[in-house]
Length: 425
Image 1 (spheres, rainbow, N blue to C red):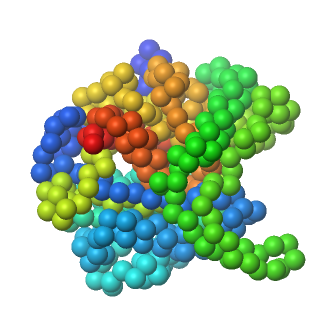
Image 2: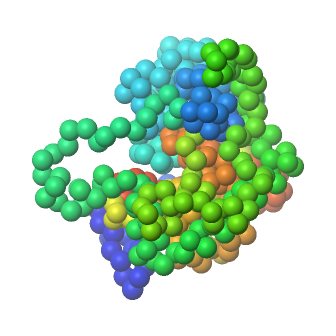
């Protein structure tokens, strides 16, 4: 069984995980090298992110959102859908067990029935896990090209109780910890590791400021697919709108305003609506393939997947996941924190993001340069794929060979991370 040890205050993976990292490093190729077998990213797009229940996509079904990005990615690069070997969709709040929604989006996009598809749910990392699954199929030579997607409508689905679980749950501490509300895990991280309310609010303010600046300067235009949807107002009147900007960015956020917000999960806590991720709707899609096949089709190479890792951490402090997953992925790639130009770390809560950044010694200017989930929103299954799209576009804007990391914590106690290389113009 994979276990995570804490040694001298640092999270360290087990020996079994070390062997998996060495295998992945051999498969992914060394950073800076080029091989016909590389798993490369061709292109990616995302929708804007809407506020759940009251935002731009509150009346839009997840299959509609997903179809918009699936269609846009292939249209942009002029690829016929019949060239795809498989499609994997990350989705957490899964209507019809996920498969129905994904297949409906498939046909809404005009894709042929001969192309298969499936869904995956690894909670907040589902969109990134979809990419890992397609990458694995490429490495095993089952397919040459695939589409990795993520989607969530938190407006139309809601998180209920955990359902029927084993009666032994109450007797097994770690099992019981798996159903701790996410907000309480944030409070646990803040209390256990001394992340103050002031630090959390400062991090949240920075996220909003960076996202507002990115939106004003048009940074997101390359990655967002405008989607025309129906919107129903409070009086039942329906109208069509085209959504091309994220709903959740609050340019007028101030520290004083954040300080006035009440704790959201416990009376004496420090986690608030202002320093937590927003409940959101959105979708993203990423086209990846084997380098040899991609080049044979004359498709561009936006990035190279150099490493991937998923690790387990204690469920009651699940937010520390990136602090364990990022070192594992960097070791696979033969890189260090100092080699990385941009870290896209999901801001589930400011408490856990601050802890992970400080634990790993990441320069704050390298973290989420265009804002993160506190400002943009966190549509659960979409987030990992959205981060990949945002990261690779940011690396491309830098105009030189560069490296980036995507990472997030995962409910029930895990962390995921991936290392990408932008090869340069």
